[in-house]
Image (cartoon, rainbow, N blue to C red):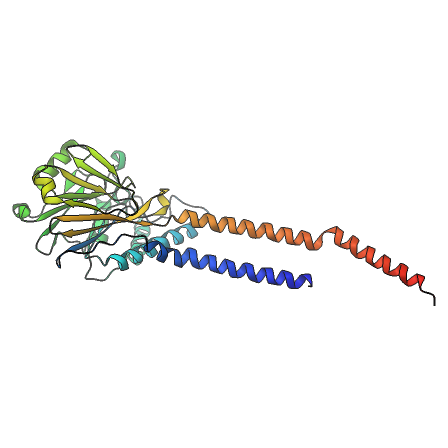
Length: 358
């Protein structure tokens, strides 16, 4: 078979395999990953399904200025959007809670940059109007980490951009409180009727293990049945005052809690830390929290997400493999031994021709 036909066949096969690899890495992997998630079925018609998204940290324009920065932002945004859409279809939530650090550079962005980040965030986390949302600011959104100054401008523009649709009460039984650990503050708009509600605290940074005056104020004034937080990019469960910490990384587990018994009989406060939803944070375990409330019964799991870095490395190895195969093939087709072999064949043919008499 002529060498050019072999080369053409190899090229077409490689292109087909590359296309299949891209199709799997960019589309199919999110569908296959969804099959590993744990379903939580409602026991009563009035149950409440909640998605909990922590630390997406949309990449900004200031900290990363390399030749691949634009590609990195595009890939990170696409990953966040793809995984969020799968989570929406799987859970069909009533409420989505964003637990801070929505942006990576919100606290240092110029007005123009901030508006561009907001537009990207809305494009990624687009939802129907009937899904309720709550946004909690993080230190990367408004500042405040390690004593960093928090400007009124940062607070105002975050609230103007994100909190227009925020809820505090849902139906007749749930009440949400935003707890801001950076500013040692929390919302409590209707203190007189708090006892009538199931009380849910939402914080970017953990509350129960921090101690101090904020924890005492939260317990005394809000008396929450449960707190959801992020910030550490880990999946953990805290119980106070027992100081018990549970690392929650079981892919097939659903945790169940009776919030009323836990607080009123055992006198414990419960906090669930949600892992980061972005692969850019360098964590192996990435996920979105999923909770279902049936009256005072809470069931919680994590919708674990594929680690994008693994699939990006597959692209790198595939590219290196293609380069190596191309070099080997070129060496085989252009190596000097082919010319020597061709010269020997011609010489042998010439000797036979000379030996034949005229």
